[in-house]
Image 1 (cartoon, helix red, strand yellow):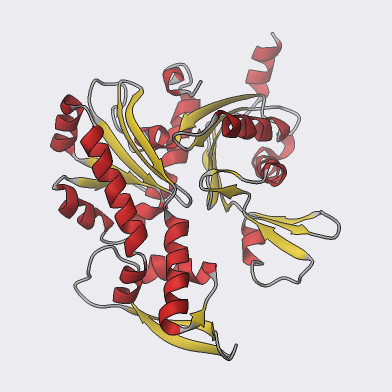
Image 2: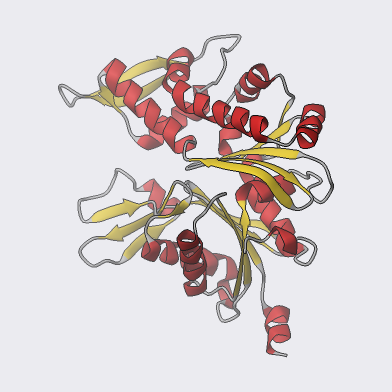
Length: 340
């Protein structure tokens, strides 16, 4: 009776707990939160100063007493206490006056997550107020979000490129036939740009600026027309701020290594996929999801390297949380996709 009562009053949720961003889907409402996975803390008092957008906005602009923390690394919890605070803050924003009603929660997690990491996610969600937690693999959620027929005896291949991990999976009949998680994704590309600018230009720029450059002129394949971008950094030798210009060719060279790691992960998946499912992928191609899918020319490069059709999911940034939302909306139908 109490379970039914809680179910009547609660607002069930789905969450994409990402290294870079956390997205929350509210049953009946759709996506209601999309914020950076960042927390700002006063080191002296251990008080939380800001979470999400507010915390990200003060990165690099605060005094020594305040530290900004990204509590997830490579798609998993690196700082349990801070993650719990962050989830609790995000749930409070979404639930508002319904804090007393504990919701069911579906959380998308990386493929190959360990039992210790699973326990950390579940405990953080429980401490944040969730009543019942189900875990689903990110590429499975991405496939559902992309509208693929995962319940059919047909091979569906998804490449979900997030902030901390790239997840490659082949899915058929609610099950993952092959999966691989490589800890190379958007963050690694940002760091590659930082290292390139330091090495080749003798300049220091922020990680936020590196990410902005990646999204603005970063490409995986040559463009028809060259592009440039003016950015401001600090000279290594003098410490003096200076504005300089970078080209799309430079940024493409900078992110070449992480991009090739993603390509190799895709090729490994194709090599290890059973023949019948591989034939299905040959017929329909495979799908890209996650923020990394927005890097221009990545679909073209993957097509050149595999000779397969490469599809980009609608709104790839939200594909995982939309898929997790579909699971919470139709819990009984998708019960088979939960991680034990």
